[in-house]
Length: 301
Image 1 (cartoon, helix red, strand yellow):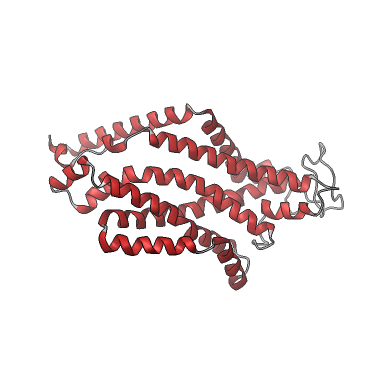
Image 2 (cartoon, helix red, strand yellow):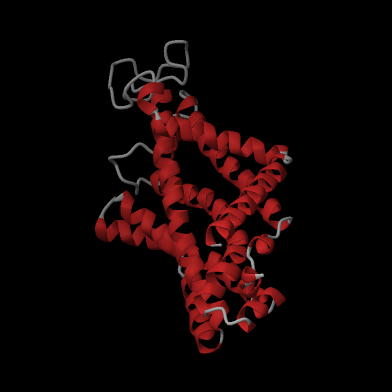
């Protein structure tokens, strides 16, 4: 009986995934965004195999214009600009994904608790959301750098714990609506436990808009990292597009490529995540996962 139920649910989930993918790929912009992110993900995963030179190798051929030997030119120390752009993709993607994951975890958990339990729990947590929203994330990052030094791990953590209230508020408002739906009330009436109602009937539906917003927050986090690096406040031990743009600002007239190529890469990556986020939002907006969540009483029928 349990095996048959598990098989049926697996088929329903597979069907839902296929339907979601078909709707996602119907948007050319979303597919374009996925292609951009996929391209940079490959660069981030295999920089050793793709980069033509070592990103830290210094030679006397500084500020060489783009050529067949150095497609993106060289910087003030003679380092290959293309190789540094390729290696910089890893820092930006990891920074954005980890910070957004922290936001997803914190925001979803606290927003779910506030929306489901309501009352004083909702009141306390909502005020906490507002307090965190008032904290200027960028200045908090500057303070952390001043206290702990240029450490990218601290920067990721700070960005993650300052952007999560947006996810929490989305989750809370969605849960407040879902807990009044008929299928949730039916699950409660049939004796489903509180944890089962939350995990099986509310969370899978409430998490959808949060995931879409989290995808947009990846680009926001990447921009935070680039801004810190541009101001010289990032970890000096990592290669950052923002730091490369900062270097290029001083050579806009005689070495335009120093700022252009890392700035273009940064723009494309953020654009890719934003287009993906719009595609995911449109998919979730037109699908209803409630059909995948059998009510407590219907499992025995």
